[in-house]
Length: 155
Image (cartoon, rainbow, N blue to C red; front, side, top):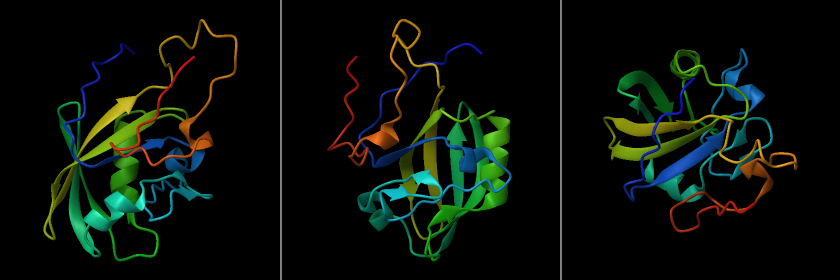
């Protein structure tokens, strides 16, 4: 699959997720919780972005590569998350695999509708082939992934 252009973030709130087995297995879970790390579902956004999202179920749209996926954000649950069917459709249509990453930038946020612009970063990061060390995942590091505390990858 050819690499797609990665667009710079606009400065709006965002979170990122490195795709794990639970995101793409038959449970198809993507928890958006106030905790930084959910042992069962992997990395989620920090409390900062969760505080911006409604505390109710809201129709949600994920835009990615010129297409849109409708789902529901369930903000009233203990584990804030996208509905399973909508998330599963997004996973399958984009052929997400373990080790890929998604960056979710919040472009619209109200009690009536939430919209994220999503960028998919495939597991083949530049320079990984030339490196003899094992690849690492961002979940191994502390940090929120928010614009005021970005990850710096240096190898």
